[in-house]
Image 1: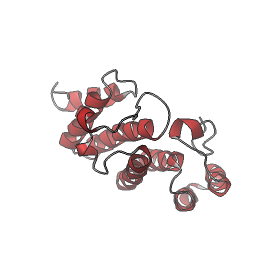
Image 2: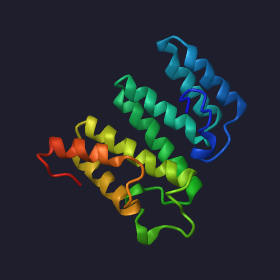
Image 3: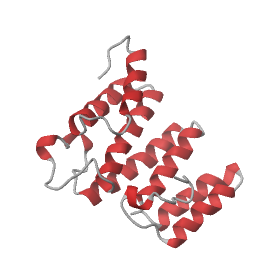
Length: 168
């Protein structure tokens, strides 16, 4: 998938991206470094329902080591994905027992994006020096996706390495 254009990500993330937002992403892909974030946040403002924009935003900011901005983008994306998937606004209250009927974390769409963004937040929490929140996020992922199909084992390994072997 092309992170900036969102090509092939629309279905995975749960919907079409409006043309104006896609154009802003294309411009960001070729913009000078100091203009990229502005173009990405513009795309988000144009299409707050487009989950792919949040993904590009948090990946961009994380790659620039702008952890607070990456976390802000991820949390906004998490909220939008929760809304679209019919999940509770507070990720801590989403458990197997509270899942609405029909929520599918294995398929493509907003529920999968929500789970994937929990993993991103776990990584950002770990990088930001908040291992306990990372542990909570990973525990939620493990409860909701016991087959670990989103790659959270990488973050769990990192957490275990800084916690002296005490993973999730």
